[in-house]
Each structure stands twice: as structure tokens, then as C-alpha cells.
Amino acid sequence: MNKTIHFLLLLVLLCGISLPLQAQIPHLVFHAELGGDEMIPSVNTPGKGLVTFLFTPDRQNVDVSGMLVKLNGTVTSAKIRRGITGQTGPEIFDLTPYINDRHIIGQVPVPDILLHNLLTNSVYVEVKTTAHPNGEIRGQFTCEVDLDYKALLTGDQVIPPSGSNAIAYGGLHFPLGSEDLVYAFTYRGLSSAITSVAMYEGIPGQTAVPPIYMNKVVGGLIQGLIELDTIDPEFLRKAVEGRYYVLIRTVNYPQGEIMGKLEHIGFFGSLAPVNGIQQLPPPIPPTPGFGFSSTTPSGDLDSLTTWVFINNILPTSVALHIGEPTQNGPQLFEFGPSQIPGWYVQKYAVTEQQLTDFAQGRMYIQVKTAANPDGAIRGVMKNTLRKGYAFDLCGIQMVPPTSSDALGVAVASVDLANCYLNYKAITDGLASVPVDAYFAQANVGANGIAFHGMPLTEPIIAGSHEIMAVLGPIIENGGSYVQIGTMGNPNGEIRGQVRRGFTCPEVVSATSLEQVTEVNVSPVPFNDFLNVSLTSKESFEARLIMHDILGAPAYVQNINIVQGEQNIAISTLQLPAGFYSISLEIPTENASVLLKKVVKTQ
Image (cartoon, rainbow, N blue to C red; front, side):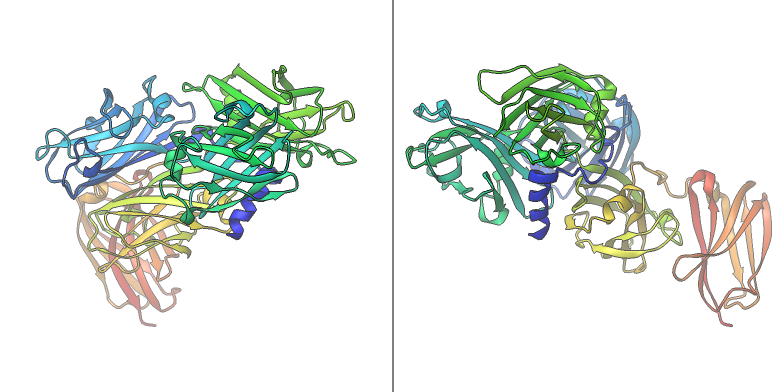
């Protein structure tokens, strides 16, 4: 609850300008969770799947990774198709060539229609098997975004029209993982005191569904929190479908003075306040002006449409600028007036760079007045994209590495305010059911302290976690990982660094290391020296690494493996007593194999 109150302040007052916004457009991340219940008609199968799309920065290609598990039959095809939930549609492209047994991995050129349909929730993946030739599992792709909704309330939208000239504009904000919705509306010209503000599923007066009240008015704004567990569990989905209306009743208009339809701003859109706090420098004395802007990209991302409502001041200019949140930048264009005072709408083409500026929070609304010709209020157009990550898990990422053939695929995201972590992971080939799963803080090659325990579900682990804001930049810079332990590997069987990319081999041992046989390590236990003998079918460069019980490298030796038999002497005189693991690695192949676990007694 306290964190959501922070979101309210962030939305209404600061809009996140105190922190640099992370670049989002290079990291469009989508995922689909597959199951038989998504098929049309539904299929009774234990089969599950998770597929992730990670767009390259130029959006010309998409890195695909996925896992298909517990299917009743052998996969015969996997197709990406166009269609919304509950409907079937034509093929966009074929994933079948990128399947290696259970694992999907590859880079696919982006068809022209792909991104537009992904951003409208109109793409799904369908997997057919020998047991179910018409399809065994299916899943709809969703984008890693928060949910924002907007509404313009006027008298002519009331049924019957009220005749009031009053107006209100604002919306709702839902960060994934939160337990609450934030609402905020600014209003002007109401005839009398507000008696109620509520959301209705369907036209007010024509529905029996109880309304959701938003009656808190603070500082001239309708603003507050709605606890999700007190409303319809399907509210967020229904609101995306445009099934809710906002109605303000007043003393003079008990049936409703102004009303508006709640609209989802779309994935990769923006809903943000415009106020004096963001103005550079802030006006003295402070201006009473306040407003909201909302922005929605076109499906092919070549244009934006921006709506602006300004209240409590008389603008002489409302313009769109490009610049850092803490700097003043050049004007892109000035909005023209509309028939509604204070209401501005403009659709405009954008270049690739301007789209990136929008994604990175470098577009802002600047409002000038006669009293403040250099700027009275300002609002950064902060979008809903979360910092998204798609990555894989395997034994070679463990510290020290394990010889497990298990694999995992995961997707995670953090909101721009660094308050909520959402995640989903799928695994296959684990030695047993998970006994431990967590997020931890550490860079590649090191072990760290866990900051979130994940639910022990199989084969898909999903959840969300309220995090400290300091963890957001750490995750963004690759300083966290997911680790899963099993009965046979309680200290961890597989691990994956939270990143944007995939590093696990399709088959863990498909490297030069598979040519190594007949490994022997002696003496065990050891004191001042160790001898490693092995046989290899080919020659290659590698390195021998010993890790201590905490996973820290204690000994590293670069070696040339030669074809045939080989003995490697290791001086361990300087090592303290304790438990160690010996691994052979080929860094250029991202490959590692555990040779033996040993103990030094003195």
C-alpha cells in the first residue's frame, strides 16, 4: 500500500522526473504462456509452454526463445498466427525450424505485420503434435507493460445529455504487481458540489453491476486508490476492452452531470501529468495550472497521437518539445486550439530517433501563459513500457557450474519507478522437483544474497515482488540472477543471469568439452597438490578453475588440452582448508563442465 501511494505521488506530482528513464524501444519484450485450455476447442493435456520475443534495437529481427514441456505427442509444427484470444487466424511465420526437441531458439526477420498485431494483443503461438494434429497447446502474446486508462468526461456523453459545459480528464494507472489502482482526474466547470464519482461496467442506469466509487477529492483533484481485491477480478481485462464508464454526479445533476468512456491507452502509450513542479525553473509564484497528457502510437510506430487537457490557467501556447527531463529542449510543434477550451489533440509523424526519444522520456508538453511566457507548467510523456528482460537458465551459468542437462527460459520486467518485479519461468529436465528458487543479487560468475523467494511450482514459476527502488538499476545493469535448486542439487542446479539475451547452448555438452573422457582427480582428500588426468579426442584451449564453497574462484589455470592422455598438476599449498569444485571451461564457447568436488583437510 505504501508503495502504491508512492505511485500516486509519482503520477500526480513528479511523473518520475527525478530519475533518468531507461531506454525502452530497443528492448520490446513479449511473451506467451501456452496451455491446452487456450486451444479452440480446449484440449485436455498436461502440456505447457513459454515463448519469448526480444526485438533487436532496430526492430528488424526478433530473438525467439521458448520451452515446450509435458506434451502428449511429438511436435509437428509451431506457428505464429494472427488473432485475438478465442479466435483463430492466418499464419505470420513458422517457428518449427527453430525447435530443437524441447527448446525453441533462433533469430527471425520481423514480418511487417508482426509488431502492429503484437501491440494490439493479436498474435498467438500454436503448437501441433502427433497426439493432437489440430493443435495441443496455444498461448497469446502479451507485452511487458503497465496498464494505463484515460477518460474525457463531458455533458453530452451523459444519457440523456445533461447540457452541462463542465469537463474532466484523467485516468487510471496500474503497475503490474501492485495490489492497487491509482486514479486521478482534473475537472472544470461543474455546476455544484460533487456527490459521487464512480466507474460503471456498461452504461450507468442500464447495468445492475455495482459501481466502483472514486469519491476522494484532494487539492482540486479527484485522486486516490482502489484496492484490486475489492473489485471484479476481471476489471483490468474488461477495462482494456472498453467496458467501463466514469460518471460524476453533482447536487444539481443527481443522475449525472458529465460522463466519459474509460479507454486503454494501448501498449507503449503514455498518461502523465502536466504541472508546475516539472517546469524548469519552477514558476514563482507557483502557478495553479494543472493538466494531463496522453499519447498513443500508431500500430506501425510511424506516428503518435497526443491529447492534452490544461486546467486552471489560460494558455498562450501549448507545444511539444524534445529534451531530457532535467533540461529544456527544442520545440517540435505547437498544438492548435479545439472547440473545447483547454483541450488539444494532434497526430504527427515521428522518425526513428523521435520514437526513441518518446520511449526514453525525452518528449514533454510545455505550456506558456501571459504571466509566464517562458513556461508555466510542463509534463514529461512517460510511457507504460516496463524494463523487460528475456533470458535462459542452465547448469553452466551456476557458480560453480553443474553438469545438469536441464534448461529454462524466463521473462521478467520492472516498472520505470523500480517498485515492482514481475516474472515467469519454465524449466525442463531438472533432476527432481524444485526445492528452492529465488532471485539474487550478484554479477556473472559470482554468488550473491537472495532478495526474493519464488514459488515452487512446476513446470512454470510465475509471480511478482515489491522491490526496493535501489534494485531496479542493479537488475538493469545485469547484477541479478535466478537460481533453481533440486533434491540432488540443493545448492542450485540451474541459473540464469537476468539480461536481454540467451547464452545457454541448445545442448549443454555440445562443445569441445564432450570430447573429454576418463577424468580422474587425486588425491582425495588433498593437501598441497592435486593431479587431474584426462583423455581428449581432440585438442583445444581451455582453463581449469577451482571454486570455493561460496562459488568464488580460488584457482585459475589456462591450459592447452591435447589429443590423447594428459596430466595437469595443481599446486594447492596456498589454498585454505575447505570444500572445492574443479571445472573445465571454454570461455569462447560459453561452455563448462564440472570435473569433481573435492575437500582440502589442512
